[in-house]
Length: 274
Image 1 (cartoon, rainbow, N blue to C red):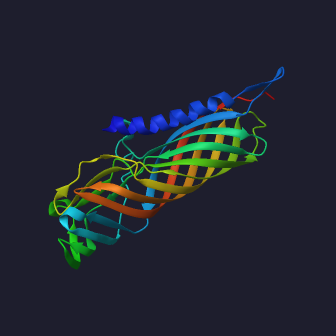
Image 2: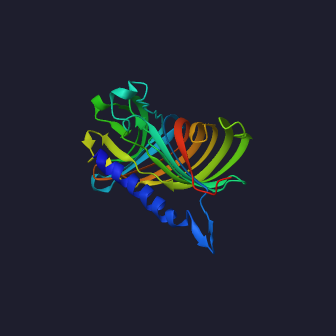
Image 3: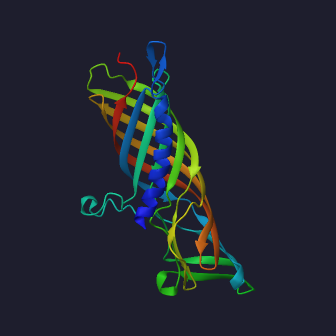
């Protein structure tokens, strides 16, 4: 199952990356003009905090159309439980593939993926709506022992296509350290892994395209010896999930997210040497 998820986002990344390769350099008379000045890649790990949200469940064949209102969700970092004792893609990770288009003005484009996790469990949840064709307004013990859980635990998975703007704070004059501030903003799909149980009825857990998200990110990037950098980011994301698979029906949800990210990256200059 994990391979199917990896295949989805790797395929998206590969398609965009390959489509941009022809523009990395183009002939213009005898002089080469480089459209992409730099390519960079980073890998890191993250932690999240979520706003309260509601989960709406529709199961027409069961006569159900109800909402768990104002529920609490939390992440599951994983990287604080022995990072190098498990596969690197099990904890909450993130990657970035970026293209600097105008180095002087600091403009670029970025493929931005966050493997985030959202867990709704172990709380008293307010349930309101129609259950078995009858109106209800009650509280249920939402926990696995009582037949309830709702996990986007193999990923709430935010994929964004970002516009990037950077400002040089400390230039690379010494050849050793450069400090930049970056702002990123974009939109893209969410690719959640949906695993849930309502009233003891389990879904067939799996990955799906399940809505969209928008995000804004502010970063501080320290580059060492021109090619290696460390990036610390704070991010706000709003995600809307729809058509999520549940037993005999669908679910939908929307929440806001505050995220902190630490990444290690590498730069590959492609423009003319100065």
